[in-house]
Image (cartoon, rainbow, N blue to C red; front, top):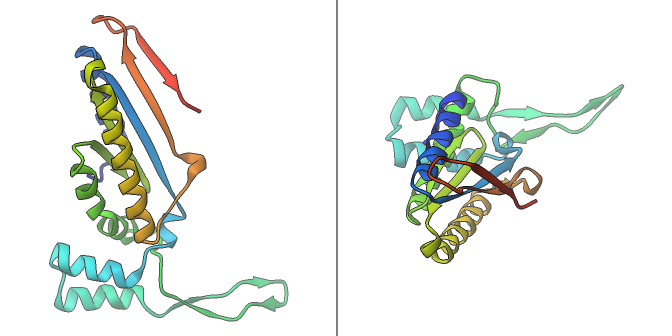
Length: 187
């Protein structure tokens, strides 16, 4: 689910506190997409808008027009590169850009949910999380690993590149019911 930054933080904290109260370990996997808004395939986006969101007719034509016939070139001093037609990407700074990006990655939620793993999405950041007990930790970590692999595959299939430098996993646990918080960093 795409949510605002403050609400995303509150949701993450709520998940952590619930796990601490239940004496569970919570593992988070943070995934960041490189140049996410620049790599969105226009044809895939338009197909998704039509099939998943029911955007058809004049509205789909308007979005197709909005996305098409953009070109760019690089100019350095008096020298310019050839003009190239842009077939991918949406403007991150526009009103429509973040909405179109959210529509583009909307199927990812089903991929994650099919593993029974919780998640939060905000713009190009995806957080997977799973609370687990010591008795099920090995199976739960395998579930989280399988989910992470499927998410990475989905990114690749949809022309999105995972930024390894900004992606990470974290383990948070409570040692007592009172909640002495311990944080383990796997960097």
